[in-house]
Image (cartoon, rainbow, N blue to C red; front, side, top):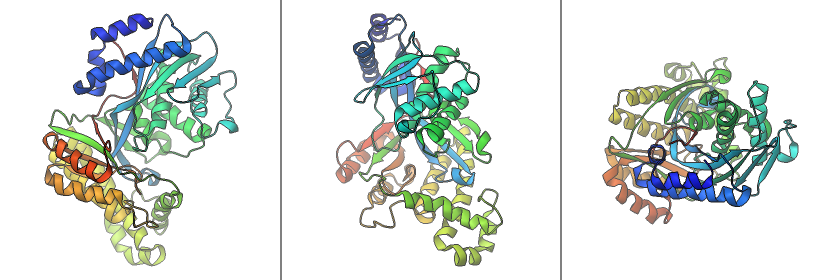
Length: 425
């Protein structure tokens, strides 16, 4: 469709089923208006085209499996209803041009797909890296133009970089490969781009959640062949709402805090003659506790306990979702959050005990939600955000309390949704 036909289809409701599946019925009007805005943005930058298409790539949440992937553990992650939305069209040149609202346009020639040092940590490197991995694996690549808008909140820990990488892969897949590349394969291309071209040694959790959609159980036993098992959860149908709360503290200058977690876990594993903790049982940790505590310290011992018990919680939570046992799922989510606070100790930086926004938020949330829901640190920790799942009838009261603590606009109500895709009628 050209721009005018596409906008008429959006206004007539032709895309409503697709939009409702991604954003929820309560955001339908907003979703239509946003799609029209992205088409208008495309027109302004690139002009009209015979065939303009819409693509959406979601943000993600980590549910359980907090800091387990680096020791080859298990995790549950989900795609959520905030995204990078793009109007995209094929071009006659061998260049990918992406203009993101409020940012400089990226122009990436496909004639040379080698990493460029000057692009490290910039979005152009992600585009080039995804295209390079597609080409290396024998897939078709080609030029396109795209205009994007994003409602992934800054500092929310919902992984906008993974959404951008996956969006690029999804566009190349649909425009040039007939949709033949699987979501898991797109995720691996996205991770390759981030690791090799962007220069960030990330795991696969973010990309896999964005690409596959809804909730996925991930097994990192073999990092080269991460096992992916989709599990679907409809919280709204069960009367619950997922909330992310931004507490106002970022992750700056916390590299040492993050690095200490895998280092201490691996130090404990080394006393068993292993590089990673995967495969070690809780009873073995208790038996070896005196040696671990003496040689590695109490925190390393506690973090090892977190890893071992967290893997058990991931499996129990995944099973609960599959059996539609919401109370058991919430119980595991709460237990995971408690373990992150007590054993993993990533709720606030040890170097800055005066600022404990997440701890404050969790304390208030637990009193308000009680046993009717669950709450936990979100993502890597040490500030930033917390996650809560609560009955819909408590949402207004919850938002009021959080806004008293952290200011207006700190709460982001979300739904689980499909992974990155082209929007269709």
